[in-house]
Image 1 (cartoon, rainbow, N blue to C red):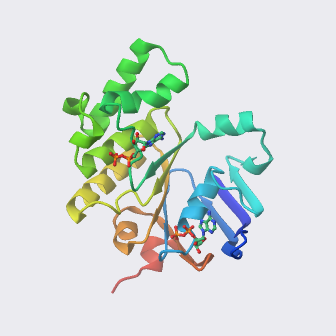
Image 2 (image 1 turned 90 degrees about the vertical axis):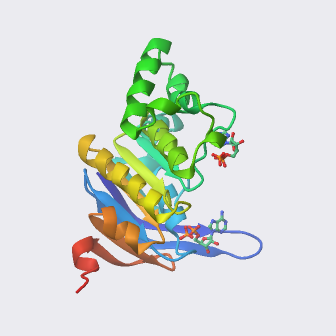
Image 3 (image 1 turned 90 degrees about the horizontal axis):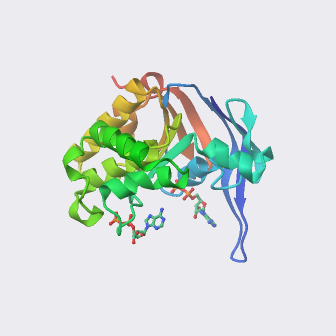
Length: 232
Ligand code: ADP
Ligand code: ADP
């Protein structure tokens, strides 16, 4: 479903160049939870941002359902991106909008009718277990609740792919586990393919089917989690 071929990323600046990614190749199958793990600075964030072209690779190709993204016009790319939701470590919620309004935001952008938005947001609130928090503002929520709002917002337009950029890194272990359980439920029930990046091996072991280990911009190991981390 997602295919990265010969992908490299060079950041160029006056202070010096950084080869953030070197010849990355992997395929994420439909329905997978695919984890990318590595130390800080390994290139994880650059890599996940290349999947929806938030970052342009210097060399190489990114294909989703056999469509080569780097060749698309900006309008075509916008359409592809509707199928890709994203969540972040810092939630990126709009603090001036309440929970309902945050989740409704991407639906307003695509011009959905008010009554349909109400129904859709109600459904999403149920999915993430925040039915009673619709009128709360982000500042009134715990970290785990904020991430649930972000997940609901990312799923609002019914994407086929969810990208997770260290979504549980700011959370305590118990809350982290509950968010990972929610991601697992979303993967299974809604058949959404998930690509996540993390510096925590535990996250990979808890939810991922496949893993790629990134070191200094290169994939040093990839395969089924059960094979790569074959604990005795
Ligand atoms: P990770 O997410 O694994 O911590 P990053 O993808 O953020 O890794 O960074 C990989 C490397 O690229 C690091 O050396 C980082 O300093 C560098 N880098 C990341 N973003 C930029 C940028 N916009 N300009 C220059 N260098 C960058
Ligand atoms: P919180 O930690 O309270 O959830 P964030 O750190 O996510 O807040 O957001 C910081 C600021 O950036 C807020 O004022 C918020 O309104 C703004 N912000 C966050 N995400 C976006 C976005 N996607 N577009 C515009 N502004 C945003």
